[in-house]
Length: 318
Image 1 (cartoon, rainbow, N blue to C red):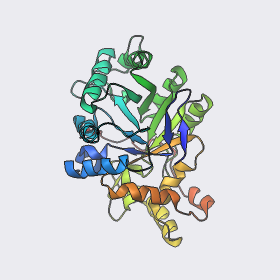
Image 2 (cartoon, one colour):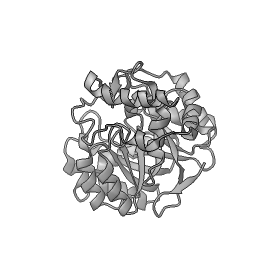
Image 3 (cartoon, rainbow, N blue to C red):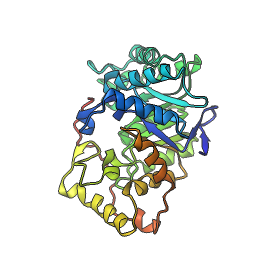
Image 4 (cartoon, rainbow, N blue to C red):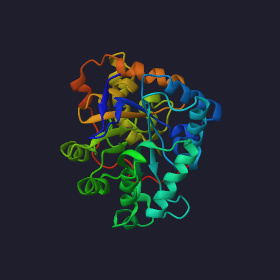
């Protein structure tokens, strides 16, 4: 699988990456859980695949995602050669504090849980949910701690992973990130990340686009999933989903393939990160990436939104 380099670093990633949030078992977010055995089998499938990028976070499942990944890394005697692991600095999930000291503790917790002494890609995660954003952005704050970790040689590339574009865009203009990660804001249903991606691309910042299935509904289908971007769907919000499904049905195409390739075909995006919850999803993702898509212009011109898809979301971390 073709790889792309992250900015000026030596890190190279495949055009597809896998996201390990579902593997933490987070029913409040996804509406279902994933047991330990399934999570481990999925991780082995990922490590055995041609994909070389796995993204996780300190707070996914309150540490379960990293714990399950760390257990499989130990089982295998280390990460596969050339494999890239991405994790994140997270706020204190009880107090919301996100100062430099908390950022450093988050990093140390990740190293211990994963059983590693170095992280290839380290993001600062979800500052919009911090108790006080200035703890993150001020001199000597969490962002300074992130770049200090890179300077110390403990992380190769550093980035920003978050949702709200209105907060993310000014940070991208002010800080020299190697990479950014946006989720749910660039899909067949939503294009609100367009200005962010334009700005990052102009600055030579690598772009990861996560959650191309809008929280899963474009992969599972509206008949099986009642949530869009982790929120209960309504007849109004389901209407554009059903238009995509109708288009795909008319062309004998899986909606998941169309949704995945919408991200894969964008030249600004270095890697599309797909959450997976069971081993067979790994092979399915690769099949969807190779599918033939007829009448592409008609597909991408279907109705979509440019407003924040999670503006009214009640955040639940479990």
